Length: 198
Image (tube, rainbow, N blue to C red; front, side, top):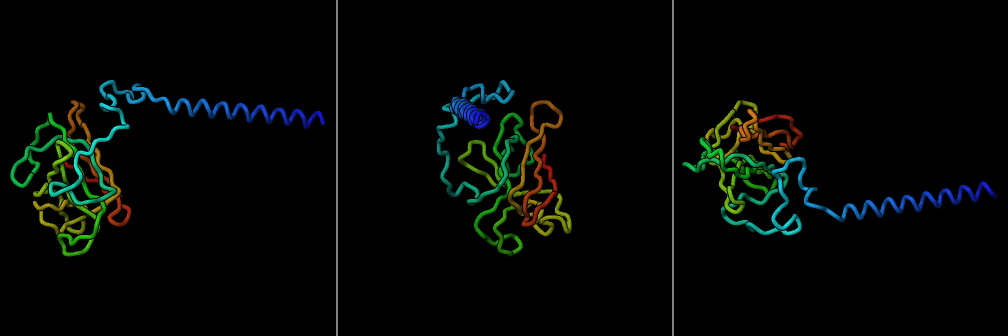
């Protein structure tokens, strides 16, 4: 009976200790300070009203990409808006949000097939008004991606896809992004191709 009492009180002490650790962890997770948003970069500051206040910038419309999910976005230098929104030269000081691909409602693609995957490229400098790149150029190679799409049209050379990544890289370390890299995703099968745009 003495052994049972020792085991009982040891288990009781352990339960009390576990509950104490849980309550401390919950208190710490509820108190978030501005230093939690630093992520090791002194230039990064919390949003104006914190992350609890979201403001609607746009609710769709004609100056938007079609409804979709599993697209990829990144922040990259803005193009100079020329003919057909062609991104041939850029204002390297101004940054834009770029959006590629995704999955949405079915539509008739350039090759007259019904698909729900996108191979388009969009950009915005304010989040409300989006511009589609209408003169995409690149490696339209036979048997790779959209090789039969019009080079210089609104369809990218990579297969229409969703669930991919899009990242901006600063190759030379000067603080300005030099290239966007699109990788992987589903087209509709898992893919491991990598595309770069400068």
